[in-house]
Length: 424
Image (cartoon, rainbow, N blue to C red; front, side):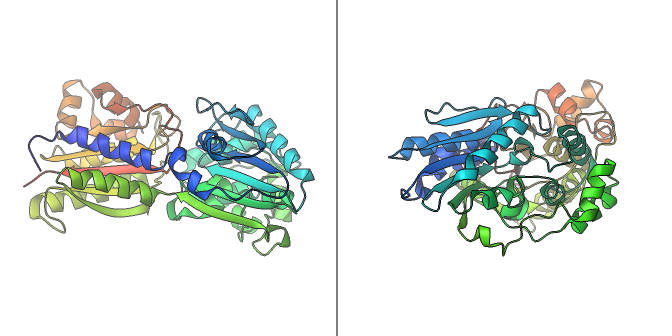
């Protein structure tokens, strides 16, 4: 690697390229459908949904109307598509009302009409329309438990699908007999459409029994009426062979793999060989940090399995089981665990961030790590292992001035991790 390259600058350029690759203005227009015989109704939810709606308006030549809901601060002005902002990751009344309005909009469509559904990460919380017998307060309490439980995103969304009046294929079923085209920006490991915003337009083969198994696995406390709904089977989602889904099509238009490939291109241009280790890595963030540290040390010390200089790229969605009094955040937890395991190893730099600009519940995307990060922390009286035990990665990197704040990125293709290993 050229001595003229600043490691932190290169890491941040790779993150920027990953985010840019998933911008709706780039990835929506190629997938717009032809004009229907009837109406075009645009609906959607997620952190990227407003920017997706704007991309539709900028490239659609004909009448259209609609409503999408996005996270507070992620609004993009549109002329014909109404943009509603709501809370994430814990739903609020604004998201509840917006979901109800979307359900009402699709209720009177004909076979000549086309529904263009714009879905991205965050839609599970933003489309909060619980089944009868479940209150918004019930959903809020459940979300808080799930976020602190250590459950994977797939497990969380399985439970959500069976408690929702709009997820798990129910939105597409409500659109029948209109045709539905769903454009998906994936934020989930494996890019499974059923898990992106809990699959409002996608058939779901999982069952209420599967949801109850997840409740037992993580010790989730459910109100009596919620448990009874699952036990009775009344929360069953729409299955993939349901006739009402025959006119529904989904397209993945941006994924974590695409983002990693964009970052890899930046690395090559700088003379650093990129290695994509996986786009769907899951598990406890601190455990993934330990494993990645072991790989990085092997590269740095022995030149195995890769020669230096190189960068190890990965994506996916780890989890954090909050045990301490810190603010959580899976990317900063991963990075702090990596730092502790590397113990100041020279020549290894890293960055971990959520491509939506929000790591956990903080308006911070993630952080950067340098070989001297631990030494700088000790100099401030900060004990790195104590910070990790307290789930306080945000406090740790914030105190060092190494937090990454992007603001709303208007997209979401999950976590981005890069470990840069300089020449031996």
